[in-house]
Amino acid sequence: MKLVCNKSNLLNGVQIVAKAVPNKTTMSILECILIDATNKNIKLIANDMELGIETIVEGEIIEKGQIALDAKIFLDIVRKLPDSEVTIDIDKSFKTNITCEKSKFTIIGKSGEDFSYLPSIEKIDSIVVSQYTLKEVVRQTIFSIADNDNNKMMSGELFDINGDTLKVVSLDGHRISIRKILLKSRYPSRKVIVPGKTLSEISKILSGDAEKDVNIFFTGKHIVFDFDNTTVVSRLIEGEYFKIDQMLSSDYETKVTVNKRELLECIDRATLLVKEGDKKPIIINITDEMMILKINSTVGSMNEEIDIEKQGKDLMIGFNPKFMIDALRVIDDEQIDIYLVNPKAPCFIRDTAENYIYLILPVNFTTVN
Image (cartoon, rainbow, N blue to C red; front, side, top):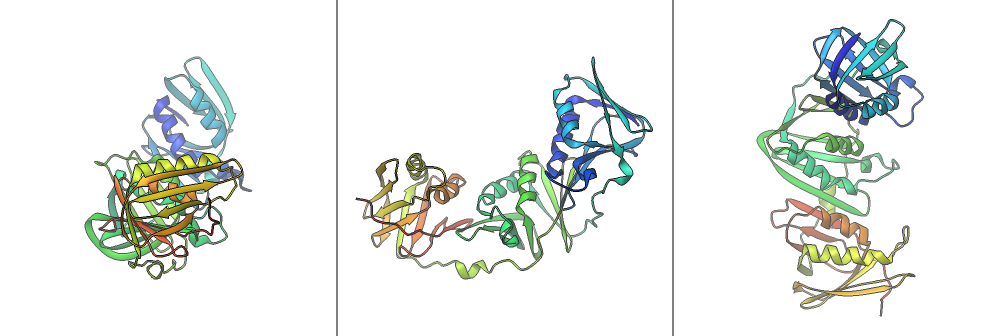
């Protein structure tokens, strides 16, 4: 096999598919990136058996063939090559020469025949969203998935399609994030649970261009994302998602309207006094026209006031400051509405149309003087 392509194109392709290379595996072939030049296109493929990525790299195929190369070594080599044309030349013993200007690397690859290709998916049942929309929806929800596999459902996000609406939900037992977006067409109802890892890696690849679309295809066990020259195939998480509607309520005793940036910056300042791993709540005291935020730790204490508009009762409540910061950072509105019931009930941050809803459970606290 012999092929020639531009270094920047090759590097971009390798970086894309490398996101599907597992960190640890007992199958050495999965630590490789497959270069497939058996047809008219140069394809790069990586597959960890849960997530697979394939992308096409522009270049010239001089001699057809395929080779599996160690992903880390290959990526490191390509990254440090001069910005010029790269020639990859493989002999029958899988010895691979990578040449660029005066640089020449020789590494030993593996037979491409041993590589596990992406599963063949019949691309029939699909929806279309813009790259910008998908990237934003993931950014605005991914932070509240669980970061361990104790509960598989919590490590993924629910994609709930209903007519012309896509609702994306994530939760970790302490908070819930919900985003609703309007789709370009109407589609049959469908619910699938997409692994958080898949969505996180896809959001890194997406350009975020509002003019470019992503075609999302579904089967019983897989989801496929098609965009630009890249295809991402992921297993779905099987099972029934949590009944979140039972956790949501429109009842409230107190409604606060506040400048989002002011509140975010205030809570962010408060965390300066919290050591990593220290679970100190931020205490919020809501009065008629004022929100008083306090934090007290072994490092020191902070007390700050913010002007608000309030409807309903006065209230004092405590929250994990990180959970508040995570939600506030992804809301684009200048003014936000916070709905509360009592110090033991979750608060809701939501807009009038409920395009976004962030539920955060309160924490117990002792009053700071």
